Image (tube, rainbow, N blue to C red; front, side, top):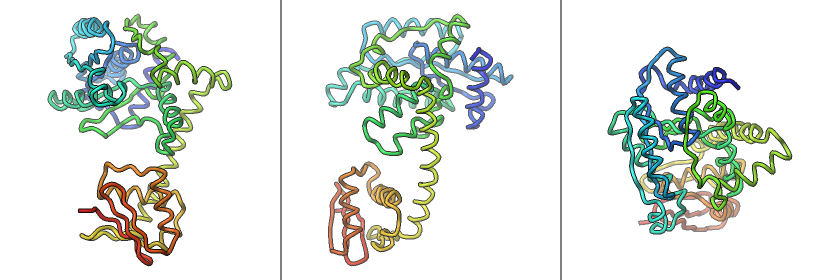
Length: 332
């Protein structure tokens, strides 16, 4: 894919989702690495392609994981000054936070990064946050979820637009590969930094990238495309199942001040996939933080399929079944 074709592909992705209209203010999350440097320059190319202007800002977080990260921030600051763009930076001691909170550096890093990016975007009036995940990242993400056993939802991968934060997070590069981005950088003579931790296979994502994907490519050279197609297909199926779950919810669930009520007999008639999603939705009404495990779902299935009186507790939620009625409510 040449430069023009790459610009057209990214532009097509953005158009499909009605993203980045004229004069959009976009905060680009940039590490100085090849992916994010390609994103930064591609957004400028797309503005030219569309005969419009964007107000771009560049934001980088120093996670304090590598000694060279300070120099990379300074290098990126210089690059951004040459482009004449606003520059934002923050320092978080991720290894320290990781030990204190007993979470992985990847998890802590992602949390503090997005929290800070959202804060900057809000305070500085940006409409979008742009991040540089590409097609290879998408395939790796789907494989990571598959390995963890997250069910269908995990197989959908990353969305082009995520509204999980107060400012939309956009992934314009999900339809292009890492190889295409590297060719773009070479063609346009754009420099970038190399993050040495990307080679460290102690990190799960790197192990998938450097060990598992090459093995899969030996079996199927276009495995990246195959995995990404799977994600898109699952996303379509989940959309249908979600609509059917909405209909079942409206049909079977009654909500009052005392809690939510549902018929055992009515629930038994629904497919298992709908039952599982109904239970998650019911529980989320009272505590959005609760994610039902497979063990929870099996116990709930047992309650539905027996006619006996039963009670079941999930953290702050109580499920009580008497005769045909199951009541779900919050314990006080």
